[in-house]
Figure 1 (cartoon, one colour):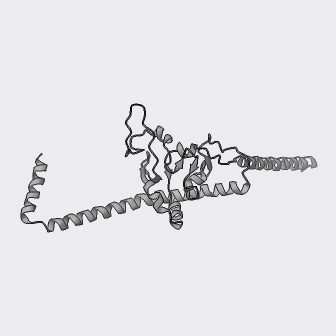
Figure 2 (cartoon, helix red, strand yellow):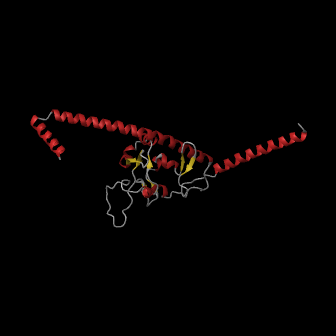
Figure 3 (cartoon, rainbow, N blue to C red):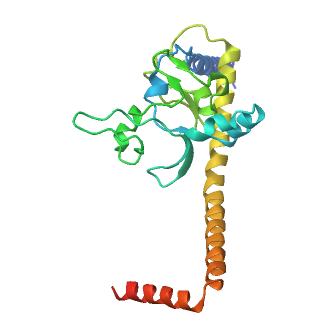
Length: 238
């Protein structure tokens, strides 16, 4: 191999190394572009939709002795994709013009999917712009608007006023990413557990009801049992 060919290969090697280094630096800069500082606006608290609750949240509330405070606001939500989430049940949006307000209205039952982003967290004071449970807020609130899908980090609300705010340290960014990963893991765990627990609890309730009915039937007199049979027979004929 001639000296000229050797120099050419060496030069190409340096070019490849430089390109690789530049690419790594560019990727690192791209990753570092995400900065966030909560501005305490009410976007995520009053117009975010269902806030999923995880086992991590329940355990944290139990350790701090505040589970009872959250019980009135917890609800099971059937998602459009058929999945089930435990959520902080939001307050129903105000009635539209000409619509009568219902105090026991299901905030999800009659709201189209596209309007779910207009429901309000029940634990946020909009007048004071203050979360009433900030120290005990769920994982989902701690990581918002950053999420992790198992492979990549995703900004789920590009219009969040806190995105791009200066002052976020490397440690704060690292903590937010770790929180997003924890949220993904815990939510996956919860979504596996809820259907199984729901089925077991439903079976237990059905078995208890059947046992209670059998006990009640065994205590009935022949006359009462005959009357009940006649009622069932009449119902079947109709």
